[in-house]
Image 1 (cartoon, rainbow, N blue to C red):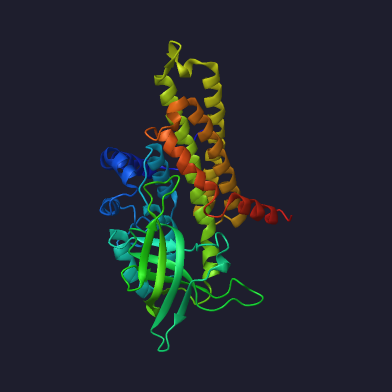
Image 2: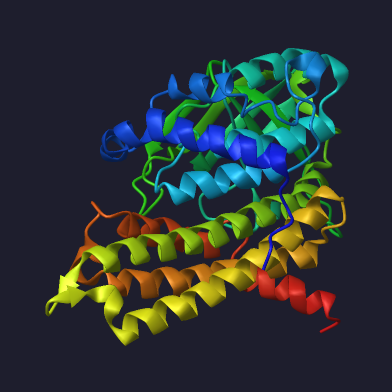
Length: 385
């Protein structure tokens, strides 16, 4: 079936990005993988390529485009090559929507030029030890000072992707206690500079997958955050978080589809080269049937991901539709990647092979952005159940 979601401009961008990955990432990626982090100066190369400013207004140094399609192409090309851009995806895919939605003109003039240039890398800190997906149960506090000039931030966060390299972090904190009838009330968003006294980066967490994506623990001890760095209105942070969840979940869904497509590509290449009993593994009927079944599932996942992309760009993607896309695409990817790893035999269990890394990277898709069990709850509620 002909794919209609991308035009000639998108495909030109794809070629530029593919060439960049081949020359600037692939030769160094094994070293980054072993180190468990990409070099900080690599982000300046991404900025020079224009990846951080595609949807930022031109007056702040961006391209001013209102579309997630370039983000989608980046996801496809990075995963196709079996590499990663580290924590930079959080910078654009998660943090930028909050800044575009909530930042005042004064804040945009301060934040966006450095955001686009890579001088300030951003992360977002929601999850806390012991709370998981229950954001309303967060304990981190931000109390307004007596003179009203700053907030005093105290608490801890965990699983913060991009937390090691981040120069600013959108921290979710309680500026007021919850109400009896609304435990979500009282959460605010603060754009916190990581150089402030009392801000501390703890362990870089050792994850099963996504090895080059720096994920950290953060702690705050009497950090003085200027009131000028409050995003949006006080105590409305939870509602802001909810508005961006469909976009975040689409991103996970699209990435999962791209992972499934990459797995089929890796398995095709491997089974054509690997010989067993005097002939390529790809020549056996079982291999053909397995890859054919996987390709059919990839086609279905692509259709779901593309449809959700079009709805997102049109401003029509609902919370339930995003949850459905995430649930379907991540479950499909898990099955396809597992079957493609099996076709690699023992080599599929060796991290030297991209299928092994893909297998590990994929597992978190059914957890972050809201677990797939939460996605089912959202879908069921939308069904009136």
